[in-house]
Amino acid sequence: MMNHSSANQNKIKYFAPFLGIYFFIGVLAALVAWCFLFCMEHGIALIWEHGAAKFNSPFYPLIVCGCGGALIGLCQRRFGVYPRPLSDVMKSLKSQKGYGNHPFWGILLCSLLPLFFGGSIGPEAGLTSIIAVLCSKWSSNLRYAGHELKNGAEASVAAVLSVIFKSPLFGLAAPLEDEKQTFLLPGKQRFLFYLMSVAGGFATYLLLSVFLGNNITLGRFSDSIVTSNELLWFFPLCFLGIAMGIFYQKMEQLSQKAFHPLENKPVLKGIIGGLVLAGAYTILPLTLFSGEVEMNVLMDSWQQMPVIILFLTAIVKVILTSVCIASGWRGGHIFPVIFSGICGGYAMAALMKLDGTFSAAVVASAFTTTVLNSPLITVCVLVLCFPLHGIVAVICSAAFASLPKKALLKRSHKVN
Image 1 (spheres, one colour):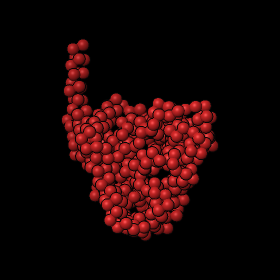
Image 2: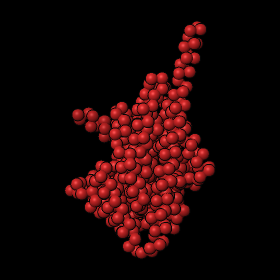
Image 3: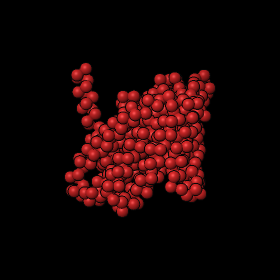
Image 4: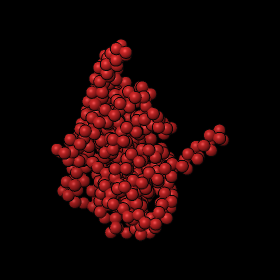
């Protein structure tokens, strides 16, 4: 009995420092994320607020986006096609190959430039790539008691995702899904490592928010009033979100085919993407940027906007995100997808006289689930944005939107 107790004490003494190290990894990841988002925010302000006010020309968006596309193309010609999708980064980390052999400065430039110049993409792909590179190098060189910290880079990505989306649940869930979108139950040690990293990252973010303010955040919706009329429209709203998701996937394929002939001409490809972006911005201003700031604008003004403008903004945003990624303006698509879904939900609410929060929750959840193919990730991202009725709508809509693909996968499995 004494030997068993002594062995447990030795395990705790051996294991406890690991938890502290992973907590510190989360702190470092959050600091890097904060610096990245700070640069993004001020770069956008410099170009689109100070620059636009100084030059005050109707051609300013065309010039800025065209020049931005050229710079993006030059960077990709020099460093390669970066940043890679979040799923590719996670797959590389899980294969135990790490991500340390990729160019840090090249990824940093290729990640920031599309955001500076108004790309309809989110920061999550670039930021996770940057963190993965840094922490892969740190982890491979950092040892404790003769053991490499093999999960250090993955844990740091978990911390960063919790900071970007202000959702510790997302930070914990995302690294635990495999490439088939199957949730994998981790071992106790691995889960504790992720938990400590997310705790360190999120605590650091909260402290920075208190002293320096937020630099990126999704909006918080007002309370919803759900009546029998809203409940009758639940399934039609779900189908709209699913249809938007299928449309996004088709646009991804079409955009990749359209820009494929320019694969070896990254500068020309980037300029064309920039001009398309600027053209859309002159007609529908809310289609520029990733969408988290514009979502707050939409919450305050959707009831004063014509229904056709809401629908067009939702559709054009979907198209622009696909065009941006295909033309070299690479980044994440989660923020733009959420924005488009909310815009489509508001359009339906205005058209059919529904509660805006309920409608936005259902459409955005179904749309995001269809694109990400993961109801769990959708719920983790959106759950903190909505009040209680909205949370129930998000969960039910995500569950319903995941059914069609499950049915198709089963059917495909039977055929094969």
